[in-house]
Length: 204
Image 1 (cartoon, rainbow, N blue to C red):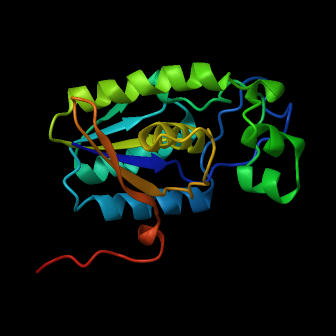
Image 2 (tube, rainbow, N blue to C red; image 1 turned 90 degrees about the vertical axis):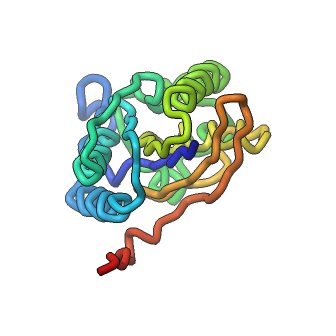
């Protein structure tokens, strides 16, 4: 079967303390446009199932994909990002550009320093979740709408990498994995973004 690992579209920025509790940002206007282009692109791929993290930025990205494919969405709590319970959402690209200490902590795996989950606990949550998705959809094509950290850590497991965060998935990017219920996993593509600049030709 094929897993299509999709990072959510662009969400709004939430400063520390602004949400009052756990930050769960919705998509920006640009984010909704990205999600619409993703849905249009995937409509011709015979997607059999759409699975999503419960966080708003993921479900709002998954909804147009599910509509375009004529199927529902399965929400799995274990697909939540490692920092799902913090009170802010600052885009990773901003943290990197401003040399924020949180960026260094992210890259070094010190996620608990800013209220995130322990990397080992996060990985132990993710791997069985993906194994369950693979087992539930033999021979299928499943779009999994989730988060940058989720994609990084799962693909690190697939590739046998020691680093947790090793590349930056773009918003609505697609990374493809061929997966068998017996265990083998193969990375087929990484960080596809053609749908943001092109449209598929529809056969007449």
